[in-house]
Amino acid sequence: MKKFYITTPIYYVNDKPHLGHSYTTIAADILARYCRSKNVEVFYLTGTDEHGSKIAEAASKNGFTPQEWVDKNVEEFKLLWERLNISYDYFIRTTGEKHVKKVQEVFSKLLKTGDIYKGKYSGWYCVACESYYTDTQILSFACPDCAKEVWKLEEESYFFKLSKYQDALLEYYEKHPEFLQPSWRALEMKNFVKSGLKDLSVSRTKVKWGITVPGDEAHTIYVWFDALLNYLSAAEGKNIWPCDVHFIGKEIFKFHAVIWSAMLMALGEKLPKTVFAHGWWTVNGEKMSKSKGNFVNPHTFIDNYGCDAYRYFVMSQIPFGQDGDFSEKSFFDKYNSNLANNLGNLISRTFSMLEKFSLQDIKAEVDKESSLGKLIVDFDKKYSKFMESIEFIKALELIWEVINEANKTIDSEKPWNLFKIDKVKLEKVLKNLLSAIEIVSKSLSCFMPETSEKIKKIIMDRKVTEPLFPRKDGKD
Image 1: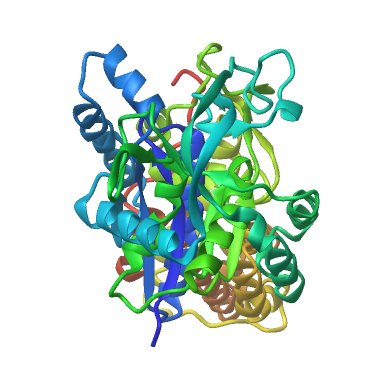
Image 2: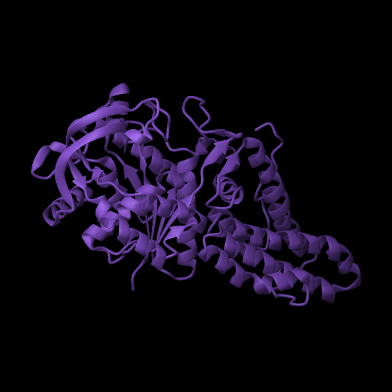
């Protein structure tokens, strides 16, 4: 049986990983963990994009060779994924021998079929974006995407016949509405293709840090053509193609939904089932940028709040797919209210009462007539629906609905009074609370794996030895 194949983009290693990188990777990890919880075999791919002029420039500026520079920065990504409990199955590097061989093999194949041909390129190039633009796209010699200076290039180049696949792409989009996600982003891609596709320059003679064109070593292969093939090279020999979900940022939707898809059509390969483009983060209302120095370093928040608190915040702050804002105040407030107060207090109060009332031996049992019990009975169906439609924030809201209702149950039923007047009802209430905690622990395993394991241990030991999330006093 084919494994469920999930990917992140491969991240450009010209700098250290930040909030944006971690967001996509955590999302993919959540889906991977959910699939595994349903006994679905998963192949989760992430990795690094290591070629191109931007890498060469950064390496030279910092006193490294390009290979030394990427080797150094790759470790930064691997360290962060380890600290964030990212459960990837394979980490691909585009400087790896297997990938290089696959890229050259694909290039040669498309040369033979005529989908790649030699010509002359004349146009504008942005080093920062590793992208090419036509005269009509350029205003005031600035990149339309990042606003940095662009350069006029004229050189011999190999071209990919992107224009050949315009009609086929539009037909595919119509027949497979699940392909472009979220659905409200699909129109942008359809309109882009309808506006007319031009053949894509896929080699450079002035960029030396890259994979050489087989049989023509004066040319290196365009970094995006190289990078997109990582999904195929990693899958080779594993019986996992096609990919089930590509998670990407919206800024690279076009590359995956259009260029990558056309490349696969040219190769006679099946297209991925879904390309899901999430939104951008701002920080305190401003776009993240090096000049502003406002890139969020995940390590800082992991050090101060823990891995699971960071994972929880980035997935609960905004609906996955939309843009959102990151601020330390929002993080701090959500940590104290949702994690320390709501979740932490539920666990602490419930097991303290079990110990105080000498009821550690009772087992979870749902009271289907109670408000909490009704939530528990309907939980699995709703949770699965949200997870499978990649509505992560709704899944978390559902979990917190159970947590909040469980806390309301404690406040309304007052177990400390029931202990004096109605011990049968007391046991019924506590059994219901245990049912809620069990389902919370199980469902949180995808989002907050360390916390889930801690709760499982508490359930087994029937004792809380330390707070799950100690409150912060604002001085951290």
